[in-house]
Length: 378
Length: 125
Image 1: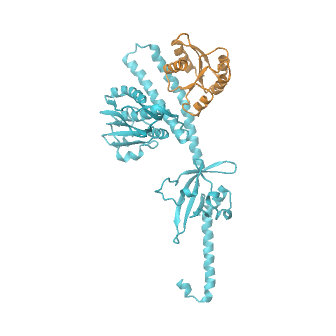
Image 2 (image 1 turned 135 degrees about the horizontal axis):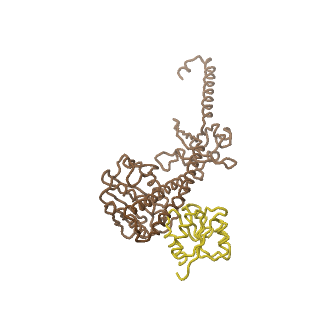
Image 3 (image 1 turned 180 degrees about the horizontal axis):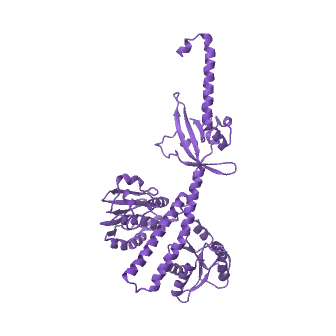
């Protein structure tokens, strides 16, 4: 200002004109850059009205920049999260510490023909000194990635089902073989060992395929559970019987310390899978000592804990435990009791959550672990 | 069992069919078999069966179609139908129940003995 103020008044006007032109060209240049960005870019002000709208946004939402500017964002930018409209007031200007956070979430758009496209939602806030604020939103088209992922999941799903039939056949044949030999079958110890070993491995193989299929179901949002009233006491009894031979074979103390729990909300088949996953982990990583199942009944929830005196989990691995393919560093070595896919806990977490419960653990390396989950009381 | 229960076993995989048939025969059931959906439809309306064990993925006529026909016909609508499937817990099972299936058995989970138990509890509720 001082410089301009010091100028000859006759020179002020041309100077202003020149500066104005410069600003205008600069603005056009920035606008062009924003327009050329391959992502949808738009901005809203504090009243959720559109202040900026680039070319890709125009193509996606089928409205010109001139018409879009000044309109309520929700009238123009129609995006959906899991099929429900996501309003700009839900994400714009929301501090990240406040839940829910929609940053990085996958949202969808639908064009006139009903074709759905997938976008990753990102946004950032700009505070101007005059206390006005704007939120700049970008949507990155990830339709190809989503489709690629979907094809992968379909592939897993088809392959998994194809693999299940031969597994079922071999399992049935082995079972029948034993049945035909009769109760007092005349196999020697070695022969019996070979037969039983094959049967066990087959069950393990089937479990791996089931995990893979569950994984693809989770990814495709097709994990359908049949949650009904389920007698947890009976489940615990079955589970105890099923794992007792393994405990005896390994010389581990195996106890169910649960008092009567009664009815819980669970899927009658999937609840077995939850126990099987947690217990097979406990048995896999425990060489001596004990494995205990205990329970406590709260007002609305039942908490089941599975404790072991096994390898435990190093603190640096804590965050990996419930992730896809996540395993503790000790779990990476191929274990005597079967290699693990690292899918078990991820699947288990999703199963427990789908039944309305939560899951967690505490652990001390070399001392043991306790995995717990909750279920709603019926 | 006062009399032998009559079972129709519909399964296209030879080795599964033969094992189930052999076992159920040995356990005192009378077992007829069908290798595809068409054969199942031919048989199911000729003889009265107590229960049909029905695979879903079948040549010629799909298992779901067979189920639909059984439950739609006055002669067979009270015949119990258990689906045999590896498509465990999917939408397929819901579809089966919607069409009137009385239960389902997941092939890679059940042993022949468990199938027998299911059959007996279905027929003696």
